[in-house]
Length: 133
Image 1: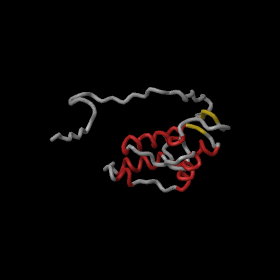
Image 2 (image 1 turned 180 degrees about the vertical axis):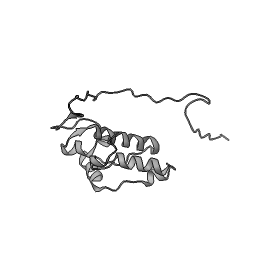
Image 3 (image 1 turned 135 degrees about the vertical axis):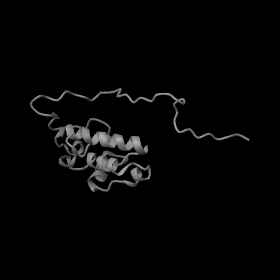
Image 4 (image 1 turned 45 degrees about the vertical axis):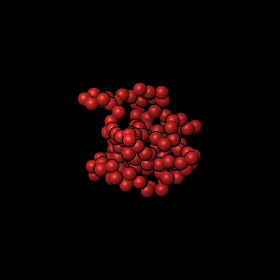
């Protein structure tokens, strides 16, 4: 009879785990005059599941769009799931606009309430409601 072993980590015992940013493929430098990468977008660039609502609507793309993507990234790291999914970009944007975050995904993973609040603020539909930094 075989044994089933459930590992908490794929790293060997005692190993140091590091996270590294390995791709800045869409990164551009912000100008000194304004913290905007590109005021208006005629086309969509990026991964839709991590895109801010303003990227879908052609709104102003600035550092707050990055805050949104960071919030989705944190959500994914903590849950292994995305807050908004869909077969099309329109599906994802409709879910964003609906305003109903599946917070149970975070709570069921015992994410501390302060972290849930931070992530909720980062993925706010309105960029003005997101943290400044």
